[in-house]
Amino acid sequence: MRSAAKDHARASQGTALVTGASRGIGRAVGEALAARGWNVIGTCRNPRAIAAHDRIPGARYFSLDLARRDSVEALLRKVKDVDVLVNNAGASLIGPAEETPIEKVRELLDVNFINAARLTQAFLPGMRARGRGAIIFIGSMKSELPSPFSSFYSAAKAALRSFASCLRMEVKEYGIRVSVVAPMYIRTTLPQEMQLASRSPYAAAVSRVNESRDRMIANSAEPDVMARVVVKILGRRHPRSFYTAGNLARAQAFMARHLPRWVVEAIMARRFSLQG
Image (cartoon, rainbow, N blue to C red; front, side, top):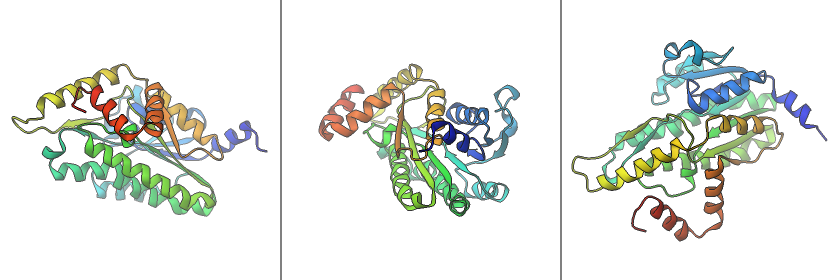
């Protein structure tokens, strides 16, 4: 049987591409991988804007805007092959489903799901030919639990989760590992655009939910906890399909798996002072 040390040595060589690597979870993941010997490629919308002290030592940076298909294809012309892909970059919005413009929904799906899937498609042939590789998706517990006024973000992350589960079965025989890491809240600056119509009947409820979200983020774990999970996945030959990070996420994963759905909905409604 292979030892943990040998697994770590095997996983510590190669190229890892981390999207959204200029801050937060992406930066923490990239920094952790670089420290363990990976050649890290980080992406963000404007690499030139990253301050010197915020750059991952030894990493190369490329521009990538996941809201734009041409930006994705431009990256793929520069980066032909990687051993590890960490689909981390994302965006969020908060607001009533009724009042969110469908154009915003399409953009959110492009960023959080469709173009992450495109990157995955592009790098799979090389991994399959070598008989090894890893694809890690940074998901969210909002894919598992109902979260008011995050309907489209939750739907995008649920699509990502389902995609990863199916992909995992498709590529397992080629030595490619696929996992999702889902926090609930992490102390980071995930962009969240407010969508709220003038004189919206939902305004008071959206405000309560947004304030609750801000409080929970302020009291959440640092991005390093996500990086540790990613490192753990890459150190295993057979990682699980789904991981959580942070105490709140673990508790909510238990709730999502073991409680009746109507109980989960009532708990979430009460948390945000909504009528259950």
